[in-house]
Length: 251
Image (cartoon, rainbow, N blue to C red; front, side, top):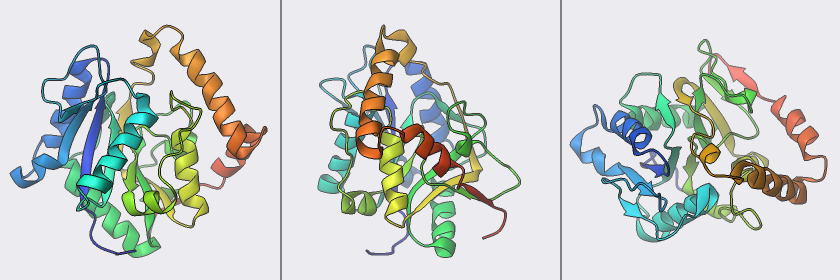
């Protein structure tokens, strides 16, 4: 695997409120050199309310995992100069100063110089009711953890391709795909890192709540998906794995 500086494209997945998308889009563009602005894009996931500045509009709603799979495939096939994909929900906003894209690239390069190849990197969150390993500790540099919540994961495209890409079979809605995909990176020996020096706020289920029955269907699909891959007692396993997370004040 070629060890070259990260060349990141940030893609915001738009579905729901265009105002939320515009907020994080403008944050990512703020202070960015003109030559880097093409590396910040919005993917319109066939949203009922279109996003005027979208890079691409999909012909149908592929949900989170399908849209991620489509985007990964696009960059591997059509824009191979990009080494990393930063795939952001549209309902996140940054709480630490930018410019965020070059800051993430510099942080990732620095972290890899200390711990080796990182398969997935993520900003920390000011709060996370589902995944305690994502919550920011401002007194530390990073947290190493076996898996991440997929609110804004930054994927290494080479390691993702090496491990077979995005496995979304039987889980159209995509809940749990972030957990399993990042866990596979950890199991393969690649770093899975939460950065305490780059942090987000996230409004959970801002769009999902507006779609009748979606959260219930997603929960059932997630249970079947993770159960078939990690075993019937997958919740206990994930708790045990989460407990292995460790903060690092120095690297």
